[in-house]
Length: 84
Image: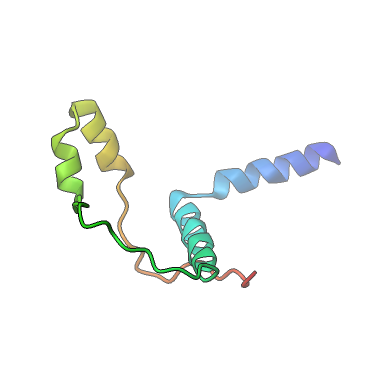
């Protein structure tokens, strides 16, 4: 029985892809944000940073990693998890 349970867990982990993980993270952050009761404000001294400016300071290996790990918004809505 333990082996079968372990095998099912292994199969599930192999079926996960990064899009499903990001969808789940988005769901968690969205639900958590509903619990917050403050409005964050940026300090007057803050600067906006874009991905291109971060890549300017990265060496070749870092640039490659950052480019591979960049994501784009999903074309589909996030996963359909029940509210907490």
